Structures are given as C-alpha cells and as structure tokens.
Image 1 (cartoon, rainbow, N blue to C red):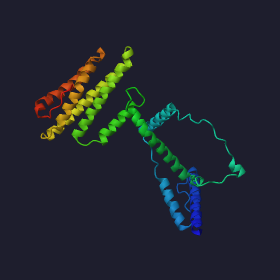
Image 2: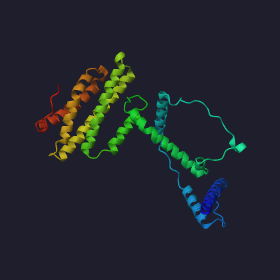
Image 3: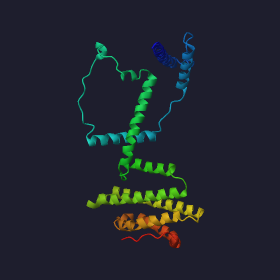
Image 4: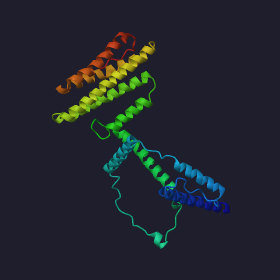
Length: 302
C-alpha cells in the first residue's frame, strides 16, 4: 500500500513538473528566449531525464493531416450523422440532464471512472485525438457501404471512386488481377448508366444529366480499354495460360447484350461516346475469336 502511494505521488509530481515546464516553454517563446528553462537542480535525476525527453518530443514537428483525408473524414462523419438522424436514433432522447454544481458544494467525489479523466494537457490532447480517430473509423464502415450505391452527382460518389482507386492500387498484384479489376469497374459504370437513365424515365433528360451519363460512359470506355490492355499483356507474358483471355471472353459475353439494349436508349447527343464504348467491345471480340475453340465451353443461355 505504501509503495502504491509513493508511486502515485511520484506520478503526480512528474505531471505537475510537466505542466510547469510547458508553462515555462510558453513564456520563453513569448520572450524570444530560444534556450527555454532547463529543469532545476533540485528535481530528481529520473524526473529531469523524463522532462528532457518530453521537451525533445515537444520540439518535433507536429503531424499534419492531409487536406484530402480531412475532407473525406468530414464527409464520412456528416453522412453518418445524417443516417443516424434519418433512423431516428439521434432524436431518441432530447432531454437535458440536470446540471450539478458539485464542485461548489463538495457533495460529489470522483468515482472509479472519474479517476481516468485526463488531467494534463498532454493526456487531454491524446484523449481528444483518440476520440476523433475512433469516431471516424467507426463511421467509415457504414459510409463506405452506403457509397456503393452512389451515382455521379451524389455526395458520396467521390468516396466510392476513391475506394475503387484504393483497391486497384493497393489490393491487386499483376496485370491479370489489375485487368480483372478494371473490368469489374467497367461493369459498375454500366450499371450506373442504366440507373441514371432510369432517373430520367419520367421526363426529358436535362443538360446536367446528359453530362453525367457522358462522363460515366467515358469512364467505362477507359476501364474496358485498360482491362483489355492489361489482360492482353498477361496473356502475352504467358501464352500457355488462357485465364486472361477467358476473363475477356466472360466480360464480353455477360455485358454485350446489356450494353446493346442500353445503348439503344441513349440520347442522340451521346452518339460519339456510344460508338467509342461499342468499339472496345469489338476489340475484345476480335482478340478472343481466334482462341475461342481453346476456351472452356460456356453453357448456353436460356
């Protein structure tokens, strides 16, 4: 018990010394004293070393959060709050608890959880930073799932494309995997075009909607082109493996009919980009045709 009390006193003494050193450093900066105030001679040797270490850490440049990361985290938190309010969880309890002035009356003593309250500037900063990271990390999963249904022009569409870029750049290895990922993204773009057209089913598509469809089709053309290029390179590197050619054949088979049906519904203003997308399908079919007999037989569609 005595040892615990001694350790507690020493910890409190160090915390107080750290606070005093922080105040001295602040005063030294204001008086343009670059040397600051070193630990006094009466301070214990161990405590002086710890204070010197804390001073050294404080002199290091503070980490700066990338503006793009900050913007993404802000969007995540806002979206999570909107979702919570829509579900009604945010308004479940709007009552304000009675405020107590126990400090003035001395009627309340710190309970077990109160002892964990941060008391120094350092621990308060760490607690605030940890809370922010925890809230952002907790909101990310739900926001990322919600962004999967976002369409061009929606608030979460940028996050959706950012997640796709992350998967492409960090979760794929080799031309074959990257090529397949590009084809998967092209399939997503095709679905987005279909849903954008369905939005305007009740009336004429305005200029902004046509622009969004054009950009989405251009993204689809780019993804199919890149997927074709990478899978072609993978096949050239290993002609004995027909996996890349089979992936191209499967993509063309599963999306050609859907694209033909969708392209007939496109406005005449999109005739140029429509032809570009059709040409990338034709390029895939031209490469697959000579090797078609070597590929596993695909079941006939009903």
